Each structure stands twice: as C-alpha cells, then as structure tokens.
Image 1: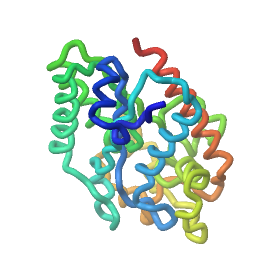
Image 2 (image 1 turned 60 degrees about the horizontal axis):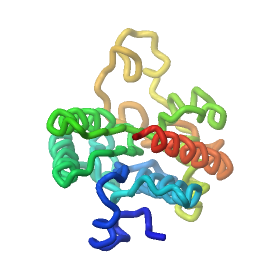
Image 3 (image 1 turned 30 degrees about the horizontal axis):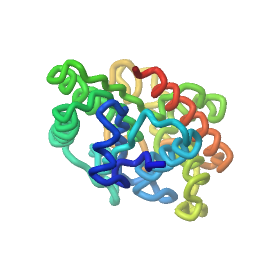
Image 4 (image 1 turned 45 degrees about the horizontal axis):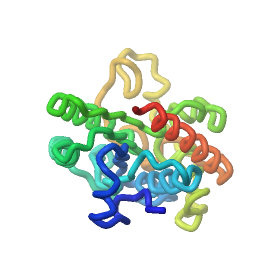
Length: 252
C-alpha cells in the first residue's frame, strides 16, 4: 500500500494516483511556547494529528497529505526568542502560489488543515483569492483547535482563554512527545486583566484591540498547563481524527 504522504512518493507514484485525490495541506508555525514547550509545538502537533489519522483509518484512500508548511505568520510572538515568522503579505502570496500551481495541474480538492490561530485570517484571504481565480476548486478550511467536542475533555474557560501553551496544547504534547517537555517549568500563567474587563474595547470580544503576546502574558503562555495530561492529549487526537474523517467523507 502506498504512503498517504506526498513526500514519500515518487513522481510516477503520484501520477498514477490521478487528480481526484483530496489534498490535505498542513499549515503550522514555529513560535515560542513559553518555558515548558518547544518552539515547534504547532508543527509537532499537526504532524502528530496526521500520523494518528493515517494509523486510525489505514484503508481510507481518498486523500494525500502535502508537506507541512511550518513557518507561518506568527508576528504576535516576535517579542519572544524562538519565533520564526513571515510577514502577512508574503505568507498569503506564498499560499496562493503553491495552491495555484496545483490548480493549474488540475487538482481541485483541498483541505487547509491549520494548527496556528494567528493565521486564520491569512488562510481565509488566500482561499478566497484562489477560489476567485479557479472557480471549480473546492477548499475547506479546518482549524483543528476549533473542532467541536473538546469541551468534554478541557474546561470551556480554558478552551476559550488557554489557547497558547495551556492545558490543551500541553496535553497533546504530553501524549505525543513527553521527552520534549520541561515538566519542571510548567506553571499557571497570570492573564492580562483585559480578559476580565467590562470595557467595550478588549483583546478578545467583538470590538478588538490589536495585540502582541506580551500584551497578554509576560511568560509567553496563555492558559493553565498545570492540569494537562497525556490521556487528555490522546482523547483530543482521537476526536480530531474522527472530525477530519467526517470532513473528508463530506467532500465529493
């Protein structure tokens, strides 16, 4: 059985597969994740999601996984060492260029599988532009951290506010790569008081102020990783795989 990963295949292998495969294009990031998680956390998690998915559904052959685009747009973390980031304009143009070339070669079905919250808007803009140029293309934008059902595993408040190095990401990393976590550095982060403010302008409500991570956190962590566990991480990945399969099944 052929690998589901584009990079593992020869040119001849890919040619024989035809143009009707759903191409999963992974978007991640390399950015600081505080003192306890590696800077490659978003990339490592997305790699783990895809490896878990392939193993969970070995007979599913409707898709092919493209290489992980791991340097994204993460300028909000530039105040902390370890972050690698493209500026927004170049990043969007890069996405349009890559996918545009695939559209020219008559691939029509794409899943943008994203693991970095800071580039949701970039993927929206790129997808809209690609769709305007190549009318027949079908692009599904899937930000795994927004999938439904995680509130059964992680408290709702932590899901809402603990989106960077908190219980959610740390649990996944404990399951996938426990050797990369500095357990003695895990500690509760004190969030900016803006999260509790009743003012009209805030960092997170309807009327939003532009922010950098240091505006919200002195440590680079947004959330509480102290209640993380490998078991929670495994459950998150299982649920993510189930949702990803549903997405693939719904695409014609």
